[in-house]
Length: 152
Image (cartoon, rainbow, N blue to C red; front, top):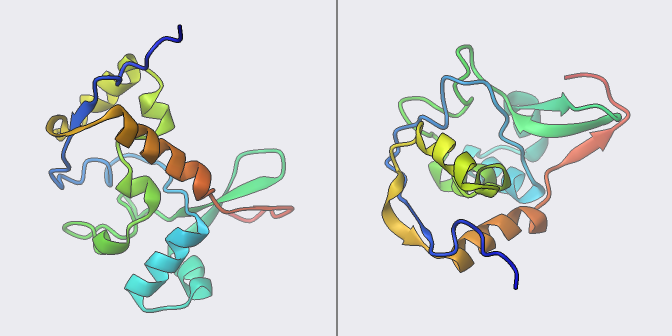
C-alpha cells in the first residue's frame, strides 16, 4: 500500500492578495507558451515585444536558459504596482501558488511557505485531486527554454 501525500485530506488556501509572493525576495516566474499568449493579450503587445520588455533568459547550466519575468529594483515582480497589473492574465506559476512541486513535496515545505503567506491554511479547502491537477498543469505547460545562448 502506498503512502498518501501529506495533503491527502486537502489543504486550505485562499489568496488574500497581500502580494507577499510577488515582492521583496528575488525569484523567478518561469513562463510557458500559453503564459506568453495570455500576457501579450493583457498587455496588448506582441510576444516578441513582451519578451524584450518584460522577460529575461536565466541560465542554470548545461547550456539551457529558461524564460522568466524580470524583477524591478527591490525584487518586486515587473508587473506589480500596488497589486498585480496583469492579474487576469498572470502566469501559471502565479495562478497555481502555493501548489508548486517545491512546496507540495512535504508538510515541512508547506509549513515553511505558510509562514510567509497569510492565505495558506485558511479559506477554501482544496482537495487532493484539485491539488494534483494543479501540479500536473505544469507538466502540460512546460517552461520555455533555449540553448546555446549566453545573454541574460
